[in-house]
Image (cartoon, rainbow, N blue to C red; front, side, top):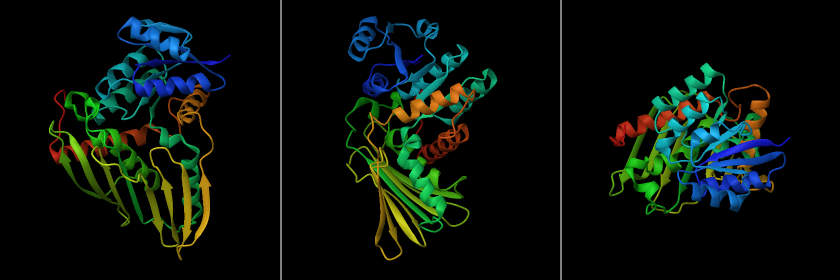
Length: 324
């Protein structure tokens, strides 16, 4: 029988997940919930959901919903996740997992207490090319990684969810989370020191940021994200024997491997995909069926590590959201 998934929210990210569920094999888009019944009905009709609700409690009472994907604004993530866990429903929560580490700790503690699966839906952690990158590094093809650079920028500052402090806007939580995760996949453990700077939008949230992370062994990660510029989105991992370039760290398209003489020695292209979200959905289903409460693709410890890094960065900038 197809595995039933429900979606909280009807925005553009929810539409991407609905597209994924509609086209995946072995998965069924069981239900969607919105604050307005007519909105839920229209979304369900467009994307083929079996049922539409105007109450999260009603969807959580649906026995055929076996996994809930949270696609609500950032400040709602923790509350929605806690409700799902209390109802015994496994959770796949869109990034950032929560607004801050305190919220993340509360969600993950409850998941452990209730033995309910929870994972952060940061899609790049689950993609095939990400696994390829980690294999290249583990084999020593570039030697020992010494430096990572990564950037991600889209001129989206006019979008309310990007600039509005009450929606936890800013480049860091929306885009910088990807650059931090890129570095975290190469360098285990916390950096020894971090220096950073940001520029503000008129609303007070960060419009652009630049981060330099230094690790105990002398390794460095130089990261940036922007809501005001379109950047090349590259991620580069460099060692003493060569380097690799990931095109588009937001949805990896290819990895090109170079040797110490700057000669291209290999290229790996991403396989065809539905939307790219299918990998995180399948990872969640596999973990749930195996009786696990987390997935190795995005362990709880990694979610907490990145959330704490973002807390530290915002604290250094004096950036607190009104509801914190």
